[in-house]
Length: 144
Image 1 (cartoon, rainbow, N blue to C red):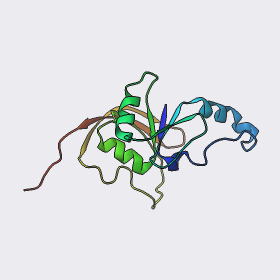
Image 2 (image 1 turned 60 degrees about the horizontal axis):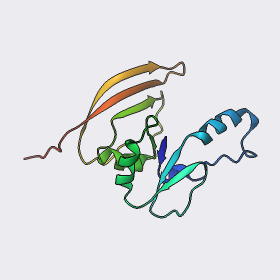
Image 3 (image 1 turned 120 degrees about the vertical axis):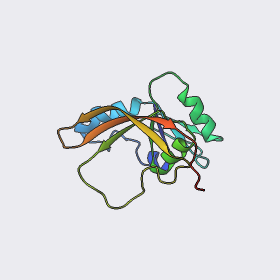
Image 4 (image 1 turned 120 degrees about the horizontal axis):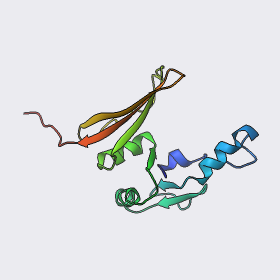
């Protein structure tokens, strides 16, 4: 299952005539994955997606409890919200050997620190490293 904010969903619907032949298998696979779009402003979504309106935090909590494998999360600002709600158990990061130098910071503005425990690592032929880490939430630290 894939969970995204509206900006992560917009424009990604793969119209079959717009997708090159060599990408068709990928497009079919992505199309089949259940997708959930969290939005208070959208009225409808396409591309095999379901709109989550109303209380998004509660909707994400309910999705997390459904069977069907892990819930994949996309969108930097939206991810920060979901992490801040304490609803992420494990992260899968792929670290590439380059720095963009601009754009949003991943998980900027979290309401409390996260303790992360490495659970898996895979070195990729490209030089990138895929790392999975488990989350332990703790109370915010306050300075005296």
